[in-house]
Amino acid sequence: MNNLWNKQVQSTELLYFSRLESFNEITKNTFFKLLQVKEGMKILEVGCGGGTFCNIIKQNFPTCKVYGIDLDTDHIEFAKKKAKELKVDVNYSVADINKLPFKNGEFDLVYSHTVVEHLPFKNFIKEQKRVLKKGGKLIIMRVLMEEKNNADQPFLVCEDEINACYGKMEFEPQTISPAKYLESPNLTMQHLEENGFKNIDVSFDRIVYYNPDCTTKTIAKKQIKRNYETKLYYALFNLQKAKNGENLRAELLQLLEKQYKERLKLLEQNKKIFDYQSTKKVTFSAIKG
Ligand SMILES: C[S@@+](CC[C@H](N)C(=O)[O-])C[C@H]1O[C@@H](n2cnc3c(N)ncnc32)[C@H](O)[C@@H]1O
Image 1 (cartoon, rainbow, N blue to C red):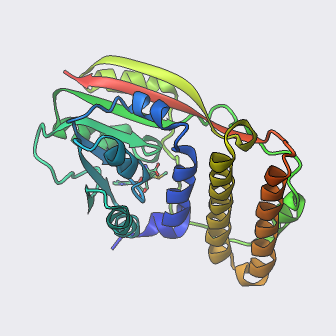
Image 2 (tube, protein in one colour):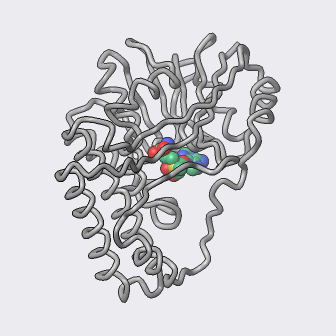
Image 3 (cartoon, rainbow, N blue to C red):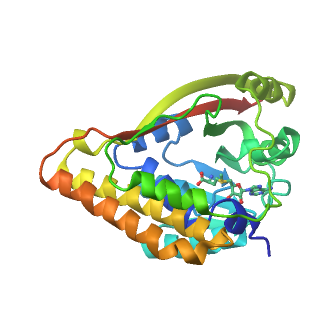
């Protein structure tokens, strides 16, 4: 059993809910375009975490056959449970990117989201290339960490107190170093070429995924709730990891709840603060030659 990612880097819930926050009813078409999904495709996501992307793809492209693999057993257990709950037919399995449990040339599309930076490129690509059919599409998406992401949430009550709680947390050193293999976009493109891929392309996109004052009230409420859930799961994950987490737990959770309720109140009162969050993505696409 390998659940190091869930235990040390990001809990499954944090991963799932943070992705659900960014891949939503407003941004989904941008994601579909970047991932180049089309009806009828056989699709594999490598490093699928809790399965947010796979589930949304299957819900919107019902004739696709969707597969998701991840090394972390807790992530896959969660993904299977969630898919059942949502009644989406996605095939999840625990597997290592270095040894994919599929035949040669099975897939029309193989993609990943925020995985490439965690492995040496030659390990990352070898098996994906093998399971892609000739002429099949490879998509690699990650956050553009070279530039600071823009998160602008002004006038949030309790923000300083929340940050102070995080400042007091004490952690043990962890054994996983995420993003150890982060490389520049042009190096990734060179690597794709060296590995025999054709039609290599790159795109840089900013996705605005939280802008409650710019949309309908129903969507705004959902966005605010999702934003709260992401913050909540981030807090729970850190509280559980911190040596002194138990002492800070009640205070931090209360502050987050207060912040959530105050934000909802502003929306109800039509007091617009135009807070928003966005993420910059770099997406590589290439064809197996
Ligand atoms: C940042 S998370 C991204 C998860 C998912 N793609 C998403 O965006 O929600 C990176 C994921 O890669 C997985 N991973 C890391 N090394 C792996 C490997 N060798 N084989 C399969 N999955 C791996 C981790 O378990 C983790 O779920």
